[in-house]
Each structure stands twice: as C-alpha cells, then as structure tokens.
Length: 192
Image 1 (tube, rainbow, N blue to C red):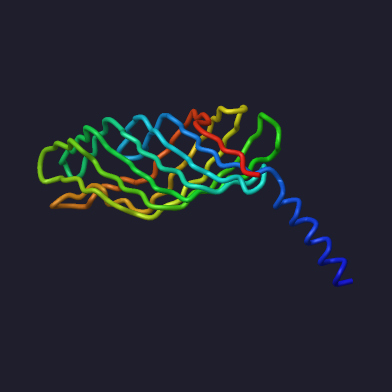
Image 2: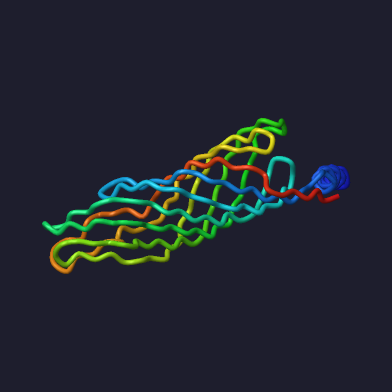
C-alpha cells in the first residue's frame, strides 16, 4: 500500500516537474486613484518578472510606481492642498490562472513594502504632510488575452497618518489605493 501511494505521488510530481515552465516579464500602465478625505487621480506603471511553476501557477515580483494629482484635506479649519502624490511598491506576487486557454481569468495576491509621499503640498495654518514606508498587501483580479492582460488591484496599506496638524485632530487619510491596469508580455523564456 505504501509503495503504491509513493508511486502515485512520484507520478504526480513528475507531471508537475516536466510540464513546460517559463519565465515571463509583464509590463503595465494604468490609472490609480485614492478616495476618502483625500481623493486624487493619476497614472501607474509596473513591471512583473515571474516564473510559471505550472501553466496555472506563477510566482514573482511586482515593481510599481504611481503618480497622483490633486486633492485637498481640511483639518480644524486648516486647508492643505496636495499637488502631487507618489506611491512606490516592491511586492512579492503569486498568481493562479483558472484555465490553460489563451483567454483566462486569474487572481493574484501580493505582499511587500510601500513608500508613499506627497509632493508640492501647500496650505494655510500649520498643516503638514509626511512620507511613509509601510508593509501592505494587495489582491488582484484580472483576465489575460494571449499576451495582453486587464486587471484591478486594491492596495491595502495600513495606517492613516500621512497628514498631520500642529493643533487639533489629524484628518483620517487612508493610504489605500486602487489601480486599474492594461498590461502586455514584454519578454518570455521557455525552460525545458
């Protein structure tokens, strides 16, 4: 009995080990936006090097940068206008594709470091803006069409302390943001 279980396990593993694997780099551009007390809109760009463990499972990285424009925060009568806001993310990523067809939906999960800063802030009173570096995660939902892909990513970055005021209560400004992407395959290498 043990030998037959071992044989079945080895047979299943050999199918996984000898399946065609590949290394791929996807790039994407998209729209990004924040919401809440500070609403701003902008653009995003990313590169995703990844290794396909099986035709339906990949693991890799997502290196993303976003620039957002606009937004005003009011705290205790002090207005703070944000000219430009930036987001950078270095994430470890895993993806699962629901089929092996040329058009296939997928889900992804990412974990990693986020650096966020607001540039060109101006205001009245004693309100100020600070940068932050935090750990966060992001679920992704999308679909691939051969070498093109569409996806939506919600970046969850804990905390609300990007804006501080010298007097009074700081406004609740979340660090979370959405990104909608249009991507394409930039490079691929099949591994035998």
